[in-house]
Image 1 (cartoon, rainbow, N blue to C red):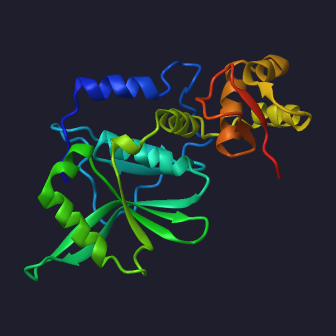
Image 2 (image 1 turned 120 degrees about the vertical axis):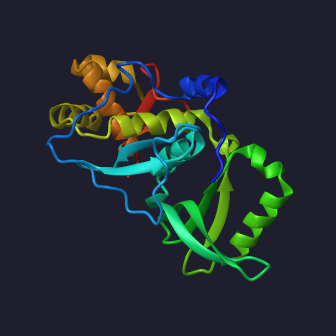
Length: 247
């Protein structure tokens, strides 16, 4: 896959949509010293490449699993997909063999394959939007998509940086950053919200529990696990209103 160089525009945009303050998304340490599981993929992305953005992040319960990505857009799409309530599991770098017009066979590696709550699977290509202006590229991805059988995926979609909502990116990044439970703080916060009627400000819940930053992180976890829900499409912040999710 071809990727754009990491540039100042990317950096400015990322700083605007990712949590960056210490109280917003400090890294939580796992409760044990276990290392995260290595990624299971059909291809190992070139993490550490010098000419374009690449990274690895850890997601999931416990020590978690490593996911490697080769572009900023791919990284953010992965985080957003993992935070979606309709996504049950997410694979990345899934190989698919397709046949070109000249009869030659090639392997396309879908950046992600998402399994949805209804059991369907979506094969996902992640590209920069400017690639869509290339006729040869459009023809190739159309040819690949047309050959995907139901046993591989129920549908194929392409996502670019323009499909990413900054609110989704911010919240998904925060949820992943605070994914490790804080047993004491979470128990106190759950007890507090169990008595909640209607909506309350996050800062008021934190003040009531006296948990400070731990309370903010706990609330973010409860939103991420859908025990709490935000009122409105907003970034998680102290002045946001939250309420218990309806059963």
